[in-house]
Amino acid sequence: MTSSVLVLGAGMVGTCTAIHLAQRGHQVVLADRRAPGEETSYGNAGLIQQEAVEPYAFPREAAKLLRAAFKRGLDVNYHAAALPGLAGPLARYWQASGPAHYPAIAQAYARLIAQAIPEHAPLIAAAGAEDLVQRTGYRWVFRETATMDEALARAERLHSAYGVRHVAMDAGALAAAEPALKARLAGAIHWPDPWAVRDPGALVARYAAHFTQLGGRIVKADAGTLRENGAGWSLQSADGPLEAEHAVIALGPWADTLLRPLGYRLPLFVKRGYHRHYTGGPVPTMPWLDADRGLVVAPMQRGVRLTTGAEFAARDAAATPWQLAGAEAAARELLDLPQPVEATPWRGARPCTADMLPVVGAAPRHRGLWFNFGHAHQGFTLGPACGRLLAELIDGQPPMVDPAPYAPARF
Ligand SMILES: Cc1cc2nc3c(=O)[nH]c(=O)nc-3n(C[C@H](O)[C@H](O)[C@H](O)COP(=O)(O)OP(=O)(O)OC[C@H]3O[C@@H](n4cnc5c(N)ncnc54)[C@H](O)[C@@H]3O)c2cc1C
Image (cartoon, rainbow, N blue to C red):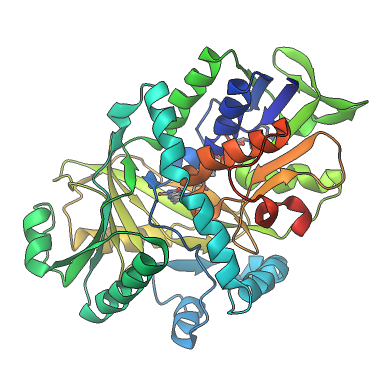
C-alpha cells in the first residue's frame, strides 16, 4: 500500500531515501532549508568507499591516544570546552571500540558497505551523472616504511576477511603512476575498487533531480516545524503546510536538534572537518590519503580539494582550522598547491554515533516516524544503501540486510 512521506534533510542520505520511497510508489516530499546537497554531503572527500569495511574505532593504543591528547598529529583536534559534553558518547565510543563489541560492529558495517557501490551504480546511471564519477580507486600514500608495512598487514587482513582488493606500490611505482607527486615517498596502497566523485554536492543535486523525475517534490522548510498531527505528521514549508502519514529524519549532524524536543537522547556527536580547494598546480590522477599526516587530496571540479581529519568540538562552535593550515603545509611537501580558491575554509561535521553504526529504522516511541542518520565518515558512500534499507522498512518489504544492528531502539 502506498502512503505519503515527508523526508527531512536533502543530503545524500535523505535524497536517496526519498528516491527509494518514490520508486516504490509513495508520495514523497523532500524538505530542506537549503537546496539538495549543500551541507556535509557537499564538503566531503567524494569517495564512495568500498574499502571502508570497518568503521573508525576509538584508538586504544597508548601512543595514538597521547598523540591525539597532545595534538601532535594533524589527524585529530579537539576543543577542551567541548569535552564535558562529549564525555558520555565518547565513553560509549571507547567501549564499542573494544574487543568485546567491535568485531560484531565491523561485521554489521561491512554488510552495508558491501551494498554501497551496487546501490550508487544504478542511481548514477539514472541521474545521468557518469561525468562526475571516476572509477580508478584511490591511494593511501606513505612517507614512512613502518606505517606502510602496518597498513599493508591490515590490507591483507581486509582482503582475507572481506575480499577487499588492494595493490601495493613501491616508491618507484608510485612516482611513475603519479607525476603530480613532487617528493619520493615510501610507497602506496592502491585500493582499485572505490569510486571518486568530482563534485559530491553536484551528485546529490543530480540524484535530487532524478527524484523529481520520479514524481517527488522538493520544498524549502525548517524541520523544526515538524509536528505530530493525529495519525500523521505536519510540516510548515515555504509552499504552505504539508501533511503526511510518515516522516523521516535524515538531518545528518542536525538530527539531534530535532530529536531532543521529541524526547530522544541518543549518543550522537560530531567529528568536524574542513576543506579548501587549490588551483594552478598539477592535478593528481586520483585522490590520495596522506596516511602519515591524516589528510586527503582529491582532484575535483573546483580544484584540488584538501580535506582534514577529525575535530571533536560542538557542531556550531567557531571554526578553528589549524588542521587545515597544517594539512596545507604537509600537502605542499608532496604537491604544488599555488592558489587557494576560498578565502576561508569550508567547515562541516561528520554525524557520528557512539557504536559507529548508522541509525536506520523506526523511531521507538512515535508512530510513522523514521530515522536515517549517523553515517559518520561514510555517509556519502552509504546514502543509497541506507536509503533503500529504510524505504524497505517503511514499505514492509523484506530488508536487503538484517536491520537489527542499525535499529534506533538499540540505544
Ligand atoms: C571533511 C569530510 C570528509 C568526508 N569524506 C567522506 C568521503 O570521502 N566519503 C564518504 O562516504 N563520506 C565522507 N564524509 C562523511 C559524509 O560527508 C557524511 O557522512 C554525509 O554527507 C552525511 O550525509 P547526510 O545526508 O546524513 O547529512 P547532510 O549532507 O548534512 O544533510 C543534512 C541536511 O539536513 C538539512 N537540515 C539541517 N537542519 C535543518 C532544518 N532545521 N531544517 C531543514 N533542513 C535542515 C541540511 O541543510 C542538510 O542538507 C566526510 C565528511 C567530512 C566532514
